[in-house]
Length: 508
Figure 1: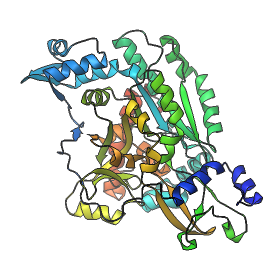
Figure 2: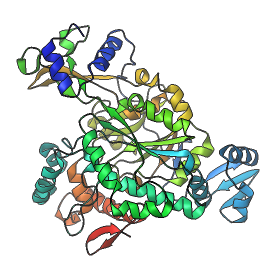
Figure 3: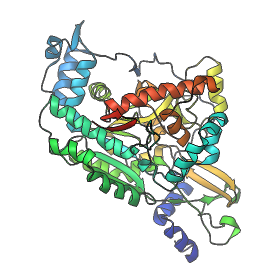
Figure 4: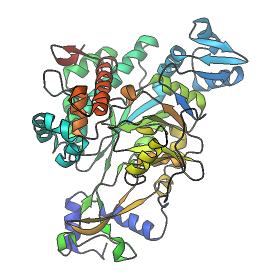
């Protein structure tokens, strides 16, 4: 710390940088403790027929031997047997075992709600989300058509945490509920399902947790306070005797830009922003830090008897509690599972599922890890690209044991930047590259319109809410928008407990 100028320290601290964390990071980086990001081409993309991939798009089932089923049902504490599910025509006997069909899996999953928690990565501001240049690049033609609506919404969203911006637009043109409020409604709806199927709610059932940032936490906490008093949530929670909002929070600090590779080693805190002496740059640390930032939350949930945790992005409307995938994951005994859908023209930011040169699965993030050109090469060769939905389901006990090592094992990507502020570098870790650290991961191939309606750009939210007609140009993109719109309408009704009344989605 004594090597940093007082003016630099004061500036970075005022902008939310945790300098102690930055200096620990630099010491670890300069001593070679981090795993390097892989270089070179990825060998292939997996086919959906791979034995580690469960196709969830139609009517998924799970087959177990009789011995394995009885052992696993007992371990999970399920109050019914595989035979009872067969008697109720929810499962079917097969040679020396059982085939558990969707109704059986749903019942198992709902019974596991007291052992599951739901977490959102909720740290980002909506700056990039509402950026004019990025949004216009999705489709110049459609952007011109929606420009007036975009300008109105971007002005509202730009300075807000993304999680509290509108997740959709009503038919009457008014903004809908926020991403975060909808997640809270969804959790209450699933608690109601448990109450209807099983009985009174236990003290712990589907607790929620989140990672915010030092720049957004105050606004997010203010929104949560407002939501806890809203009649829309209290009407649900009061009937069940539970709190309308239950949320553990980990706050991610800002990091500091580090010196450019041309400055040589060791890397230091960048202190020449805009050509001024002792001036740094505060930058986000990336969602990959969640395994460090949320460590206290993960440990607390484990102490409360939680066995499984979902982690996903706040801006994915399809990221909801799913009892069927929870059941399959719990029955499989795997360490982690991840959701994938076939890539569409809208999927331009995020990661794809690939095999590295050793044959292991990993997630290659578009831009930092794999270029758009390489993806097109795979598609021209007739390959179907499985796009990472940003939804992970983890065995919490095994995750907690690995938390101290994960920050050093996740690939570290250091990217040189040449911008108005000067030559500097940014270090980043990507959450979903944890796939490569899992010995035997499970994957769910899901229907994009049900599980991956993401909004990386404001234009995606607008086009999903009010899709363009196919005959107005760019038919592929218009077709995807129509499909996602239908999926959004189903989600608002089935998962979020809303009904369309007079052009506005309102609680039932």
